[in-house]
Length: 114
Image (cartoon, rainbow, N blue to C red; front, side):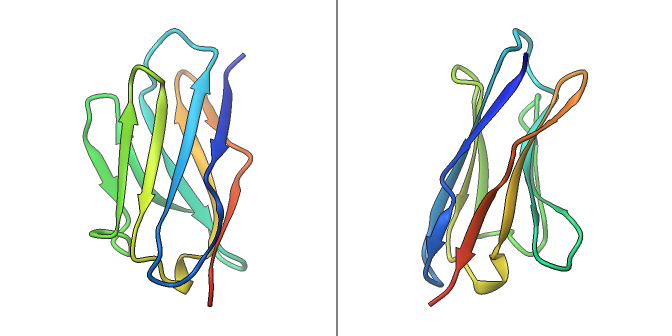
């Protein structure tokens, strides 16, 4: 009965910021992985940022220094703080959480445009 609830997507101007949230419910164990993927039109889905159960993080080269992935264990929620957004960041962003199985959020559209 694991469910992922995503929030925070929308329209933002270049140079602006957004924070995405993904709350996982329905499991009593800590997830092995919580993070974010994105898919732009005509492109493959790619890892943006993620955090492992031990706290280590990983980022795509294209977002290093601009995005920060963090986790709130008490709320079982993962966040993606996105700063200095660029038009090329426009994509559908998906939350991914790994327990024994992999769970995907339904996705949120982030549009960076003037």
